[in-house]
Image: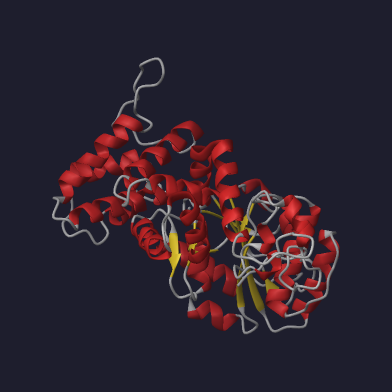
Length: 423
């Protein structure tokens, strides 16, 4: 069981460095499968290990992080993802069609001709997504993966590594990380139980207390205020029959309804600190973006300008607030900046918006971007001129099915491309 980067990353790194052959004597294509519930830190742990110099020295062909996600479903989508990865890792631009196995074969051949390479395959939800990446190159490519579904590991000769909830000590350390003063021990213990030692929620709780303390609030008072909110609106709140759970019980993360309620209560507590007015609605609208994708902040600004009248400066300020509260990830090292959502948070936001809200936000996004683009001779939107690398590969997901008729077949980043932009 892995609860955090401490012993966990060393175990994974040791597997990657030392596991080269099956017991039967054959070469290994996949060495480790990190499995556990969403929000426990599988991706964080895998990325941390991949960034270690000792691991990178082991793979002169490069260390590549690949995200699959639940949205990549069906043979055509999986084949497109394999083609995308082939292009990114090897530079090969050949089209391979819509069959995943046909797409996986050339990837394996190209990897076999390269120096030893590490492919970290993140967020696999079904076996069919993984198989094409395991074709060939057994002697030169190692391919660990992360998944919520531990059953996926069974057909493979891989070392299973369970990434579970944090230990109590780890949870306390994360909850109190860099606070100006540690809240009273009994309050900390109560929050540890209320979050179920779930890294995702502990991070939000920590940032909530830190934001309040930054205004001069007493950390214990801020922690108590949040604890009351979690008890009033979280899993220990009375059910429809007026029956309340014991507030001193540890959150059971194996119960989906209680887990979802805890996410809802934690996120709602955090968004109360956001400015300006209606910031909670702006945050919910981020749920329209594709799972596990980086989204340019400029594109978020286009959405929020349409839905809330926010300019780009205000959008950047609000994104920074959200990142400070651990509600999203913000990468300022990419030109223009990008944001990402954890899929647990994204699921919550989509549920908050509902079908009507999702349709409205998607329509607002497409209308806002279309208004900045030229038209074709047939009055279709020239989507291939969009400056947002994210958008061409996701027009259909945003409700733009009919808009693909206006695509430029010769445009390398056009909506008809069989790959998604990774830049």
